[in-house]
Length: 340
Image (tube, rainbow, N blue to C red; front, top):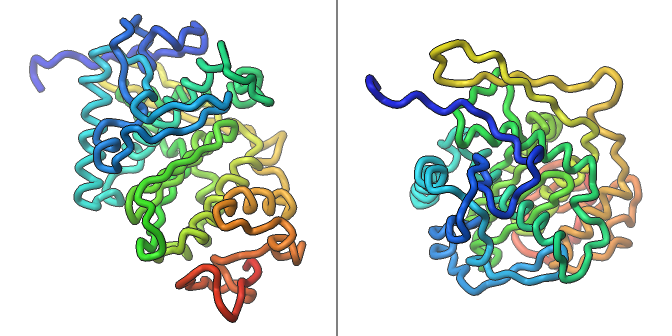
């Protein structure tokens, strides 16, 4: 608009300044103690009755959802975070998630993922119980986090991703007849993966892989576009989380020089696929462990999952590799099938 203020094209890299506790998570401005935002926004707490419900962090401490807060300056809250949350709340109410552009989904999922990660890193400064594998000592994870934050700056700064998308994002339809769960989330911080269920829809993201995992899983993702039983959704998530574990590269992102008068920044990306493989080799034994973790709710033992080491247990596919319809679990007569 004529006369409107030029956008702020200054990028911020918090990992060079090492201050998460009292500076805005998005721009680095010093904040007062009361200048915070919820990791899971108020509309989520109200819609899914999350007030008072608790989650356990890596140091075994317990927090209520309304206590999951990170520093945010007033400008970033009113100009960037609140408009994003308003957009997402309206999309849920109208079941219009699939009509949203992928960049918006990336930023919204990334805001929750990053918020949880910041809280975990802050907790490690004074943990209730020191985690067995502290995040702050995981050099590879911190390298991934730095790369993620470069792209996540698009929430505040007008950034165009030139011919790439930063993340693999999957949207799955859930068969709401199979359980009463309307909200659920989980993550794997070290592999930069995050999943959230909202009513009869599940969103799963693998951050900073430049969409490579979704490309690798394109057939499975296409086959999964049908109402899925929760045990099938858990299997799909196991594939995503294990695939993220196998990812062997961290993309580099480069901002092009900004000419005078520009109103946005253009990012290019580069992946070192010359000296190393993009994914480490798939091993059914490792994938079986991922399945066992995702299937804890149904108490499916590892021995059952790996009864045939060459074909781990699957509820997404039958033994001929055809997509399966699962009306109930456990099944009565036919029993489960192997992986396709």
